[in-house]
Each structure stands twice: as C-alpha cells, then as structure tokens.
Length: 408
Image (cartoon, rainbow, N blue to C red; front, side, top):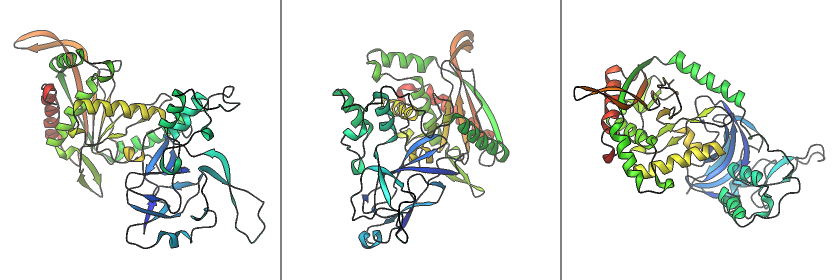
C-alpha cells in the first residue's frame, strides 16, 4: 500500500486545491496516468501517478484545500492483495467502487440527511474534463455533456473538444454565447506575484548567489539557422531558442555540478538534464515547466517540445511532473527584451542561465572591428555548490557548442 500525495509543484507552493478526480476506487493505474487536477496560485495542473497499481481509497474530496504531502489517495501495488477489499473501507463521503461513478464533480448535500446516516454525495451536472478541454469548450460554446470523452475513465480531453469543433460542434449550451468569458480558474495574478516574491525572497536570503556574464557571437548560429529554415515550412522551422537550449544542455552534461539540487546541506546531482524554460503568462506572472532530457533531443524535436510546452502553459495544460522536476532553469527575454538578464535561482536548483536579446554591436574578429549579432548570457549560481571558475567553464562551453550549430 502506498500513498498518492499532494505534490510540490515548486518552491513557492505550500498547498493546493483538489479540483477534480480522474480516477475512482478500483481504477487500475500505471506510471504517467493523470489521476487528478490540482489548482494552485499558478493555475490548474494535471497530476500524474508515479506507481503501478489499483486505487483502493480516495482520501480527499473535490474542493479540499490540502498542504503539500497530504494523502490524496491510497494505492494497492501489484502483489499486495485485493483492491476490492481495500475499497470497501473507504470513508462514507467517497462513492464505493461497487457504485457507478458519474464523470462529474460532486458536492455534499447539506442538511438533507437524517442522523445517523452519513452525508450523501450528489453528483452535479459537470462532466469530467481536463482543464484545457474545459477552457476550450467554454471559448467555443460547446456543451461538454454532449461529448464522449476518450481520456482516462471517460474524461473529455482537449482533442475531443477540438474534434467536435472541427465537425461543426455539438449543441451549444443556451447561455454560452451570452455569458462573459470566465476568468482563468485558479489563476490570480496578485496571488502569483506574492508567491513569486516569497520564493525569490527566500532564494536571495538563503542562497549565496554569484554572477558571471559572457558575450557570444551569434553570426555562425544565426547564419546556419537561416540556411536550415530556408527550405522548410513555417511550422517546421527552428527558432534561436532551440539552439540556446540545446547548447545549454550539452554544457550541463559536461559540467553536472550546475545541474541538480541543494538539499539537506549538500548538493544532489540530477539524474537527467531537465531544463525549466521560463514562460511569461498572458494574464501576468511566470512559470518554468521542464523539458525533459534536453541533451538527448534533436533540434527539431526540441523545437516541437518547446512550442508544445509554451502553448500548454498559456492554455492551462501543464502536467504536475513538468513543474516538479526542472534541474536547471533558462530564461530568455526574446528579441524584444532587454540586452541582458540577471536571474534569481529557483530553489532547490543551484543555477539559472539568462539570455538577453540579440543585438548588433562592434566586435573584434581577425584583428579588425566589425559589426556582429551578439547575445549576452548571464549565469547566476549557488556558491555553496560551485564557484566562479566552474561557472566560467560552463559559459565557455555554451559558447563553444553554439559556434558549431550543425553538431547540436
């Protein structure tokens, strides 16, 4: 028996609200299955199971606000016995496995149950759907009750909504056209700013930062990028961000002392290069979900992963695992940003790399002054885990990899 707990989706998270269950007692799950939707100050996130087994008990109800680490459900692992016998002991407010579970949220019916009977749970009219699917359906005026979900336990996915829209859409709810667009559920810009401020204050208070900068000539990578993109469709073209990410990942592979976590008074190296890419949200605020195993991606697959990540971050489709395990963070201000950026380390990580915008500047090459597109890379690192010598070698490695774009 093991507990499925409220995960920590970042150093600035203390608690989360259980918005929706996507499993029920008796559900067979495997690693990577989405089991619940949890809401934090940064939005709604799909939370995955990290073990194989059978759900025996739901320990929390939809709508509960729970601290990080609190049990959400209990899981019977293979070989541990019958899940059915475990499920029969679930708390009265949870529907037993033998009863049909409607794909809806539930709410307690107050004051209608005579003692000593336990309170009843009555289903609402709200169907199971992922946050992204619910938001898209609201934008298109599609009634989720009319869709057949293809997700886990029949939940409606974003693909189901988009397919319905492509076919002309099922009947719309009567008030959907007239109703104003709802504010993004679970996302409050003021709350996010407070949470970011708390995490960054903790970082600056507890982490002895040191900063290094290096200016890099982008002539070769940009020329190669232009040649690569010339014969490709727009959706297949690369952006400079893909080169920056891949060069950073390869440099981290050479210098793993910057890729990991400071925990319990010591550095713990990461088991992979999972780079958190800082994404500004349209409503304000910032999140940095991870792209996993960046050093193993081709540039094309990395670009596809980056586009997918940014799109889901801004539409509410980020998974909990993508928030839980970045091992290093990259922030880029883009082509309309500042010339450089000095990042603040996101604990328990030990470093962050910032890229400014590419600008034309005088540059000395082969003994003469010429105009070149340059970018400033700025490393902030934890002096408990590394020092300036290592940081300088890391920045030099990033530059070296960028100068050989065809090998990335």
